[in-house]
Length: 241
Ligand SMILES: C[S@@+](CC[C@H](N)C(=O)[O-])C[C@H]1O[C@@H](n2cnc3c(N)ncnc32)[C@H](O)[C@@H]1O
Picture 1 (tube, rainbow, N blue to C red):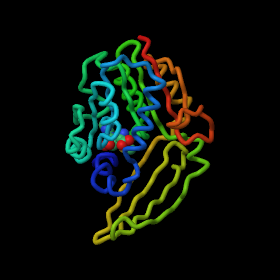
Picture 2 (tube, rainbow, N blue to C red):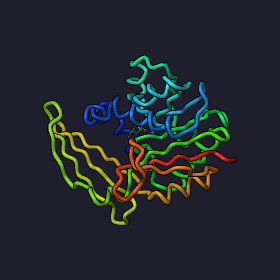
Picture 3 (cartoon, rainbow, N blue to C red):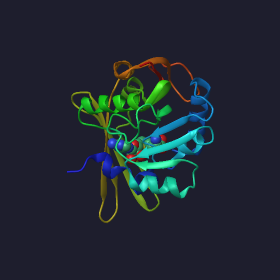
């Protein structure tokens, strides 16, 4: 059986979330540029780049590679004629040499998708392996505290001619948030999105265990400090060994 993230990140994902857009990507990359120290002409990796909206902005500053699992999203990225290399791959086994990048970014909750935490740690270890000493890893994840307080259990909207229903819940053990998406039609199409509810402390622990020092923790793309009310958890890790 295939994993949920292999089927969900395709055409329907793009149709459903058109607001995950270019302006948002510019804001995120400008904030990263202000906080991280990356040499001019450095090498950047957009890990789980999707359709490449951040890769495009990163590529205006650094030599950029985008990696993603989704053929559909990579096709969209390449169609955009972005000045970056795009590679299909799995974040658990990165096809790059050790210490290859000065900056690695994982943006917009592109983490926490696996059924076991060993796989999550494996991703961070792979990121640490491909990050040069002194390089930066930016992990931009949902803020679990904020999500628990604001979860909308059900909503419904129209996308084109189709009613789209979204049901959100937290698993009984409290470890995952699950979104069930149903696109009404003939036949209906159903998808699941399942993300591990890591706390900021869990993420910091994994980064530290893999060889990063967490130098900054922000709560949004405007660079405000992290709090329980922040929509995001954005950690900056510096590779120290
Ligand atoms: C929420 S989307 C965000 C995409 C992009 N970062 C953005 O902000 O537009 C998550 C991305 O993770 C990718 N992904 C999921 N599992 C993956 C894996 N095991 N290895 C690499 N990419 C993966 C998906 O294909 C999807 O493009």
